[in-house]
Amino acid sequence: MVFQWHISIFSLLSLFFFIVFLLKWFFNTPKTQENLPPSPPKLPIIGNLHQIGLLPHRSLRALAQRYGPLMLLHLGGVPVLIVSSADAAHEIMKTHDLIFSNRPKSSIPSRLLYDSKDIAFAPYGEYWRQVKSISVLHLLSNRRVQSFKHVREEETAIMIEKIRHKRSSSSSAVVNLSEMLMVLTNDVVCRVALGRKYSGGGEGGREFKEILGGFVELLGVFNVGDYIPWLSWVNRANGLDAKVEKVVKGIDEFLEGVVKDHLERKKGKNDDGETVEEGTDFVDILLEIQRDSSTGFPIHNETIKALIMDIFAAGTDTTFTALEWAMAELLTHQASMKKLQNEVREVARGKSDITEDDLEKMHYLKAVIKETLRLHPPIPLLVPRESTQDVKVMEYDIAAGTTVIINAWAIGRDLLSWEEPEEFQPERFSNGTIDYKGQHFELIPFGAGRRGCPGTLFAIRVNELALANLMLNFDFALPGGAAWEDMDMTETNGISVHKKTPLLLVATPH
Image 1 (cartoon, helix red, strand yellow):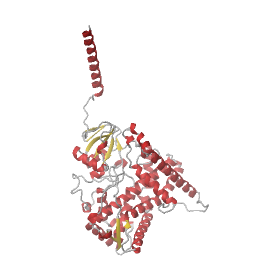
Image 2: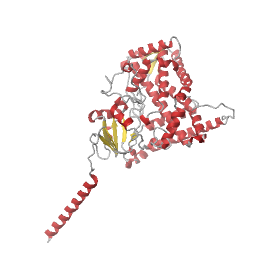
Image 3: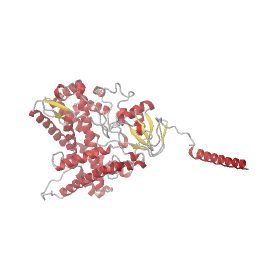
Image 4: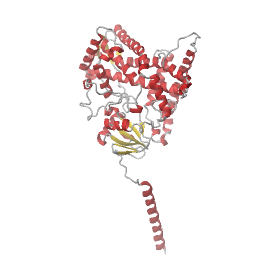
């Protein structure tokens, strides 16, 4: 009897597990086998997070060299497609551009940018189309960029004079060129966006510098809660949440003051009650659009503030980064520097400064900028995208909701696209057939497709003008007669990748 009872229990358990197996097989087995991109082995819970490293663009490239130009990682519970070749980037940003035009939800950028009311991080949809249109037509059009030509030229001349003054105080005076370039890009964008500079040593200048520094730093912070939601409490424990709230509060108070000042100026009065002349900076333009009901798209103050912070993130940090790397590469490749100096000085023909009208004649200058952007794209992993539906890419099945990271840094150093890709050789662009405007996917420092950067023209104008005037006016040496090959070219980590040590140089007027 006992034996029969055990037999019955065993039979029931066997039947139960058989039914469970059938149900699981029926509901979980796809009707057609998926062909997923290759993936490295992953760990429980964290997936492949441990393989990202401190410099993700480098570690992801190393993984891609083993697993291919389309590689599927799992960062926590989030599937992430890593794109590391020009052909794969073409598939994402052109062939299937619409499907990959969304942005994955990212909590820190969302909080910093008024629930992603900017252009860069806004989800794809009608709101994004409207703010992108406003930026392209009213803020960053060719005509508008050209209208701020005098600002770029004036601020570049101020930087050159500062370096001259530093030299006149001592023949061996060391110039922190990195700091000079940072102030230049900051002052240009401040004047264009806000109508005034905030680089002075006063309270307003210090406040702005601190706010902008915190903003850029937090944009590049890794937030574990985005990938493993149940670990979100870590940000409260380590103080990250508190830091974000402090920066968000500082940004909002500062921008509220900027908007208020512009509204008062529109009325014709400043803080002292004196009549002032109306300006035409970006805040003025956005407030004018806000007042114009004929647009059919209401622009709230939060949208204005989010767009202004976008301009700063794209226009200061990334522009300065490209300039700094251009100088660093030229300094360590003296033949290229001499060639560029000769071109600039020949075009100048005795003039003390280069204007933007002179730039079109400087073909080697443009090649130097392209080569710098190839080797050092300011945001090496671009801004992530997200698929909105299931799609097949290069014969692989990509599910809806997959995050996509395009490694522009790896693509710029791909042996299949470039000869001697690790070498700084501006001459490779001498024929001018490859550009960075999103049509040639082997060079995409500003992205491509619908989500490409709308501020490319503005950034390049600042870079070319500053670099040309430095080459015209100075010869450079390292302090103490150090050799150029000893220069530290180590990178920092973050959303934009800077040179870790600043450019400390002795500048001799030419």
